[in-house]
Length: 206
Image (tube, rainbow, N blue to C red; front, side):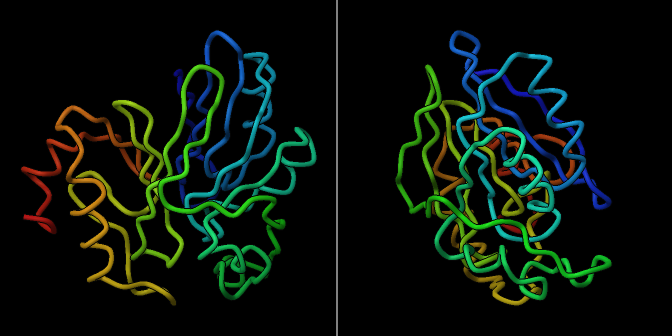
C-alpha cells in the first residue's frame, strides 16, 4: 500500500489517498476540501478510485465529498452512526464554517469489523466512537488511519454534539492501544505517530 497525504481545507485536515501499487486501485480518505488538488494527485498516479471513505461526518473531513465523487464516480462510505451528518449543516458543523453544506449521501454504511479490499491490500473498519458517534479508524497491516480519534500525544475533541470523552478513551484503549507498537497511525490533523509512542507518551491514555 502506498499513501499520498495532503493537508486540505481551512482547518488543515489530512486527506489520504491509499492505493495499491500493482493494480492502481485506491480509496480517498477524508476529502475535506481542495478537491482539485486531490483529483490532480489521483490523475497524476493514474489511479482508479474504488471509494471515498469518511472517518467521521464533520465538515472539515467531508466538504469535498461531492466534487470528488462527481469527478471519479466512486461511492461514498461512512459509518452508520454518522451518515445523517452528511446532509445537515448544523450536525456536520459546516454551518459554523461560513455556510451550511450538504456533503453528499452515503452509498454504503460501514460497521465495525468489515473488511474492505483495495487491490492487493484491505482496510479493516474499527468503530472508534467518542469524537463522533460513528467515528472509525481504518487498519491495514502496520498502518492505521485514525481520523480525529487519536493525535500525536493528544486525542480528538469531545465537546461537539455527539461527543463523549469516556467513550473516546474506551475506543482508543480497546481498539487502538491493542495494536502492535510499530503500527503507524495517520491522524486527521497533524503529524503521524506510532501506537507504541502514544502508549508511552500520550498523557490522555496513561
